[in-house]
Length: 301
Image (cartoon, rainbow, N blue to C red; front, top):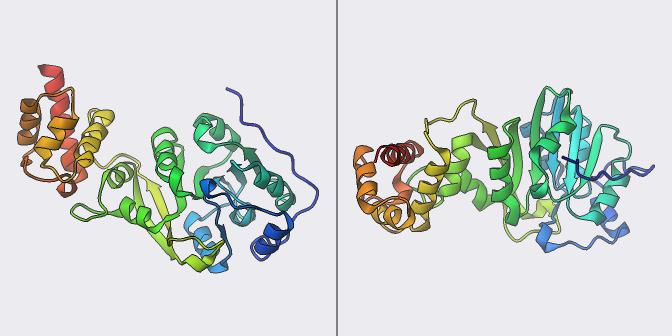
């Protein structure tokens, strides 16, 4: 496969992007695009917390998504071995060529990260001991990007993400809470989520409408539950939460078209789970047991 196009760097660079953020915005007449979720970090204390969470070492490779004008990119490049920054906004790509021109360990990729094969990204990090991901994510790509990297990029050991506070709480939520859902289960199957910092609105320019969190996802060496068919388990989870107010026996019977109501009832009984329970009450291990039972039913009937 061909690698995404690279963009050349110019000969000038900013010495401190963080302190010059507003002047860079004005100088380059940056028009913030809502669809890209562009809110640039301006608080040095938050930047320090992100760097601490990432923990970049000299032999690390860092994949950064949505570098903006390069504030975090600069801090990462000063500590990590290699930084690959993927930016969808071509106007910002041109600016990054200037602000990061002094860093020969930074590669700027002008592309939509959701459309780039993960193996193409991996190829940029030859010789790195570890590969980590850092990103300030707009709401509309948060879940798709996280799941793409968790499912398709096992070489990424950790992810440190700036996300909306409600999304961070959902990723870390436990059974029984209002925040607990399909995203909680999917993330926790692959990784351990840890909230590293809560970020107030005034730490960004322009100021966003909702608060943010820095969350760290540490990939499990092995999933915490044994599953015979991952796709089947996530289908069970989706069916359960698509009708989360209904009893589990009904939501699964309605949402699992390949199984009869009787087979769903049998799978629940074998898992020791009452059909009257709701999706948000079940743990990851319980969903795993139900899906394993359905797998056995499918292969033996």
